Image 1 (cartoon, rainbow, N blue to C red):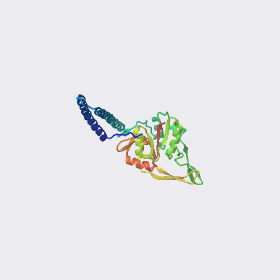
Image 2: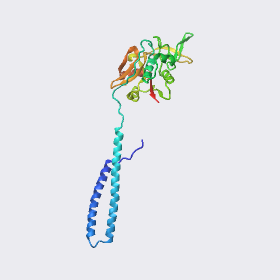
Image 3: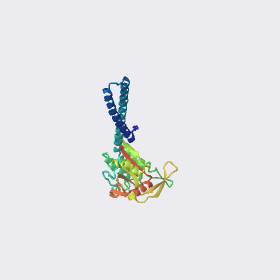
Image 4: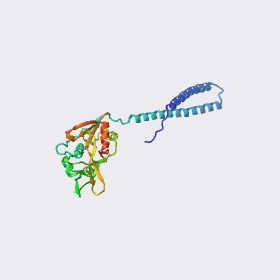
Length: 291
C-alpha cells in the first residue's frame, strides 16, 4: 500500500496559531491603513510598504489554511483505514451435510469425509461414486514371503468397505478431487504441515470446511504393520487409529468436526488434544476453494 503523508497534530496546532496571528496583524494593518488614509502627509513610500505587508500576509494565510486542510484530510484517511480491519470470529460452526462410514465403509473415513465436503460444495456425488470412480486403491502382493504395496500417499491400501482396510493420506484425496472438480472453478490445496490455528484463521473463520487427518476419537496413535514399498527398497509402517474428519468449526477451547466414525455426527475436542493427534499423523489437511 502506498504511504500517505500525515501532518502531525502539533503542526495543525501551529498552523492555527499562525492563522490567529495573521488575523490579528491583518486587523492591525487595516487600522493603520485607515489612519494613514486620513493623514494628509502620507508618503508614497509608506503606501508601498503597506501594500507589500498585505501581500506577504495574504500568502501566509493561504499556506496556513492549506496546511490545516491537509492535516485534517490525513487524519480522516488514517481513521478510515483503521476502521476496516478484519476481526476474526470468536466461534464458527459451518453446516456441512453429514455422512456416516459405519454401515458400508468401516475403513473408508477418507472417502466419506471427502464426499461430505463435495456435497457441501453442491457436487452431486455419493461415497460409492467417489470410491469406484476416483479413489486410487491398491492391495498387498506377497513375493517370496515379503508383502509389497504402495504407500498411503500413493493409494488407499486395502478395501474401504472391509474391516481389514488400512487407509490413505492427503495426496490420494487431492488427486481424486482434481479429477472431480474443474480447475477453472476450484483450487484444491494440500495444506499439509500447516498448523491447525492457521487453518482455522484462513479457512474455517471464512466459512470454508477442510479435511484433516488425526485419530479415531482422538485416541493415541501407535505404529503397527509394516510392508515393503513396491518398486523401492523402502519400508513403510502404518500408524494405527488413523482417521480423517471434516473440520467445521471452533470456539475458544474446542475444534468441531463432522466425524464419520460410528455415526458420531458433529463432535468437539479440546484444541490441544486435536493439535497433538494432528501432528502424530503428519499435520495433513486439504482445502478446496473457489478459483
